[in-house]
Amino acid sequence: MPVIYIETSALVKRYVQEKGTEVVDELFERRQGDEFFALSTLAILELKSALRRLVKGGQLQGIQYEALISDLADDVPSVSIWLPVDNALAEEAAAVLEKHPLRTGDALHFASILRLKSIADDTAQRLVVVASDQEIITACRAEGWSVLNPEDEQAVQALRNLR
Figure 1 (tube, one colour):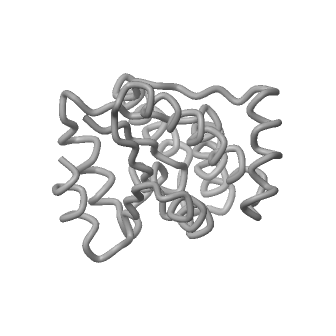
Figure 2: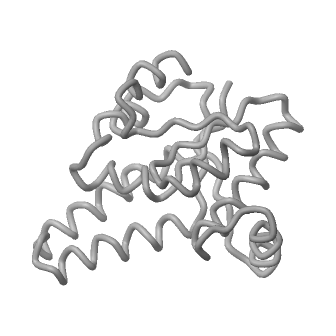
């Protein structure tokens, strides 16, 4: 039974059509009963920011934004584990930077993944990180963690093999 951490670069594909959207859609729409989805609260903030920037840039209309936020609200019950951003996580992210030269947001995601890895290990579950951000992917793979990049050519098959 996998614990699946969905990083923002993958989550945005659920709401904005881009390479890898079909993989993320399948992840949500064919979720298995024994799968646990995990998100950092940071991902919701980053997603809303990305969508608002699309509105500001004219690539998305306000009514489309509202519909996407409604879609997000519909997906929220799928998330089993919410990882908060707090002072302790910021300290953990700062420590991560000693090993992995990540951007601030990525360091916070990585620290969240570390917390989730501890939970997965304690419960004998497999951790899978879903991300398309190359720096996050590189750092996760350096730790030996399973990564599903929705943009990879074989991502649909990898997802099906995961299940």
